[in-house]
Length: 324
Image 1 (cartoon, rainbow, N blue to C red):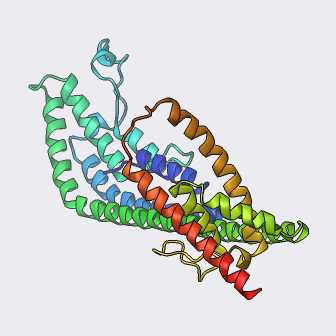
Image 2: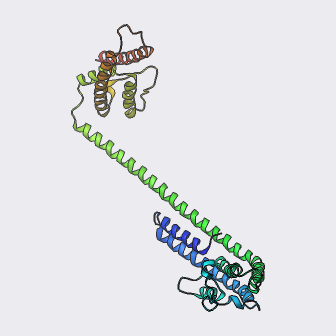
Image 3: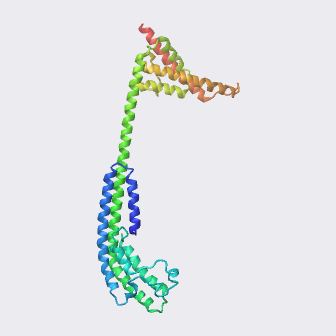
């Protein structure tokens, strides 16, 4: 179970986490309110615990433990060598009534100090001495009464844990909601940016000169020289602005004249860059291969795909000539 000190430390850590999420002030106020209510409940429990202390301190054998040990008066020169932390009931009472921040925050802290009073006496005094016997008897009586009181303490601690868990869940939900909102906002911004870029592309194309017949013919020839991967990308460019065009169909009917200016300009610059890259790759490939290398099946597929494009372009050109 957490002591008052560890609970305070946990509360401080929670406040640090809250600073990084939306609605920090609201969570901070809620955490402060929850802490104040829990502290009041603990104060009530400590007041109830005070009845146990009165019963112990009013016992006829409690007098040696009511005040700090008079080390000098009794000539106990080795007392501080044996006892690390002296404790007595007057010190406990003063700390219970303190209002300067040094007061007990949890009833278990008081319980620990009560045990320390008797354990110190039993540790320093011989087990055959009267003080040792008195301390042992009172400690047993205290433990008996503490066991009867303990269910109230554990009930409050369980309640506090549940409240902390609920608060953490609330923080987590706030973080998730904030992240979801950020994702939506970012998605909307990207969409708006894409739309603006698309409008900008269209504006640029409108201001460019119209694609000439020669340019269109050159694009058609360039398409037949592309590798399968670049060819697929080129066909995807066509399909992007022409939903009816099937870039993955077995037979392709590509009419260059039917494409928009935007599609044509994109194709022109794409095939230019693609062919430039292929020239470098082909040069490297030829240097590293022998003249009598066997036919590669992939090359056969590439040739077949290029033939399809050539046939499609030729077919379109023939139709156009017939209309004239």
